[in-house]
Length: 223
Image 1 (tube, rainbow, N blue to C red):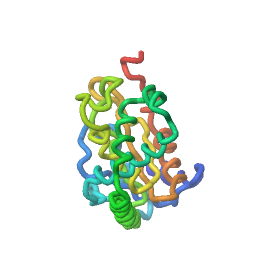
Image 2 (tube, rainbow, N blue to C red; image 1 turned 90 degrees about the vertical axis):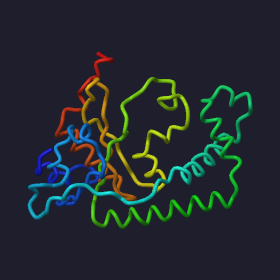
Image 3 (cartoon, rainbow, N blue to C red; image 1 turned 180 degrees about the vertical axis):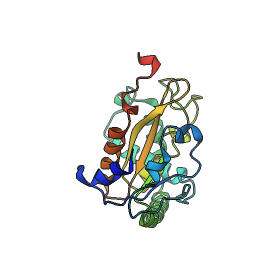
């Protein structure tokens, strides 16, 4: 993506300001960054804008336990109308977390909501400095289908540390292809925007796809 592409984002649905402040999450590995021209992410060369140095970290602690409370309790509510016979035909992992979620207390739920609110405020402050946060979609390559985790044990949140936090903060995010691993497996770029900035995220995702050919790459397994 060229600097001019960022300047043209305002013409795309949802639109963006002429100056877009973009930062890559701290800790993104070289295999992720190799698929992206970091100059385009920092806005280097955009008139009137200073390049964003290095990377940044939103700074919040791991929120997996509060997330589990909210997610599992939500699953319990969603499955509430279904009989045991109907649940037997559902994904076993979903049924399991719903059963766990049904056991949480109101206090535990409110504690998790307090974490959500604090994280939302923290990300609101983060986006005062940066318009968009870029992360890998996943920290690992694709693994065998039919498993919740690569090892077959534990929950899916163990391999999605870049995505579920933004379910907690209720922010819009999009995943777009940004290359293939050495083994030919797809790599995703996640674009995260402030709350209610869905148009900004979609515009950036569209611009990235227009400026690259990653979305046209076909993994060898599918050829």
